[in-house]
Image (cartoon, rainbow, N blue to C red):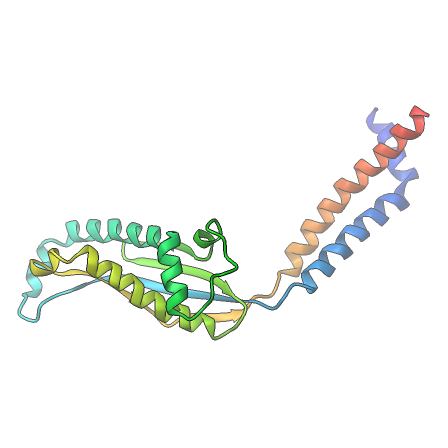
Length: 207
């Protein structure tokens, strides 16, 4: 089919094309509106060190470069922990949240951790109830520091050891971006409409 013929076909079948676009856009917005209310929570984690009271501050300063490297590696470890099904279960349990409806494959998807610098990690997750964000953050603080304590039980006797500082969470209502939805559904509708028009012509001529 030549371009000129294709354009004439679209012009002739413009009602089908527009109808398909409106149908898909309307269906997408309807689907968005019937979704249950959910909340997004953002939690900031900081990798810090805990020192004995008699430890000199200049002792830490001399090893700054190597300590920052170690902090970076440990930050990666914390990110892996937050993707571990067992640790995710411990966090949910500590927050008093049932995990009965979650499969093993769903557990690593509960949190979206991302290390943004050597000592800073941002964790995002969704909850159906607003106050669950605070409970999960508190449980996250307890579970991660327990893991840290278990991991550094020997180094605690020799030097400053890791501690995970968890900030107060920021929770907000998760509302969909209607501009992105409009653009996505419009493009999808146009593609579907074009295929519908072309398919209609193909089957009509085939008869």
